[in-house]
Structures are given as C-alpha cells and as structure tokens.
Image (cartoon, rainbow, N blue to C red; front, side, top):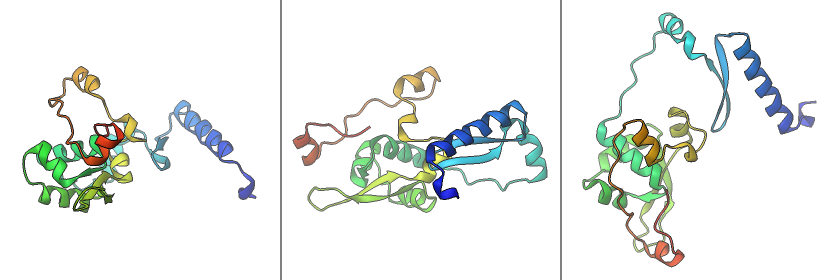
Length: 171
C-alpha cells in the first residue's frame, strides 16, 4: 500500500504535520534537513529537555580546524596542498581530526600530476551546521552583516583543468 504513495504526497503530509505541530505548540518540531526530515525538540523546550537528559559536552573544534573546515566547505573539492596554500601551514593533523569527526571525506583524486586526494564536506557537516545544502552557506556580505570576521579574498590556486575550463575554482 505504501508503495503507491507518491513522494510529493509524503512531502505535503510532512509539511502539514510541521504546521500542525507549530500551531499546537508541541514540544517537538519537524524540520527539513539535507537528507530528509527530522523530528526534533522545539528549541523553546530545550531547557527542560536538558534538565531531564543532560548531554555530554561535545568536543569543540579548534580555531585551526574551523578555519580548515571553512576553506574546504567554500572551495570543495580541494586538495590538501591547496588548503595549506591558503592557510600557510601544514594541515595533516587538523584534516585527520575533521575526517575522524565525519565532517570531511575524500572526494576522489585531482586530475593533475601526482593525482592528489580531493576533500569535501559530508552530509554530517550539513546536518551539524543546520544546512540543507552548500548554497545555504553564508556569503561574504552575510558574514559582514553579522559582524563576523571575513578573510581577504584569495584567488584559489589555478590547476591545469581550471585553466582549460576557463574557471578559477569552485565556491
């Protein structure tokens, strides 16, 4: 019986449930995420849920890890060498940490001499930061409006395929 249900019907039903939960002031909410829908505690009830179920303190990412993650997120897929060129330091340890935490993964190999590995963010990255897709990453103007630090725009290193394709990189 469920096999005959169309995806659009399911999406409409979920959207209707989302609205009903909001209107009824429920302690949970339906939110659309990168890989589908999630039933989660409404943020206004978080205080009480935390009292009932104290969560262990999550391990925080260091400033170098966050900087590396941002470079990968905005320029993916990107090689380790290209990230190091932007940061100016070796990122082996930081990259390993990001991969262990499931925020970054290997995306393949670059079509340049040596065929270095390419890295990109994961589905978990999108979920962790509350994004449905990479288009929801804030642009430079949004960062400035929020008074967040904005790095100088540095042109990505040109690779043979970007020169041939007439592009200067992604992101």
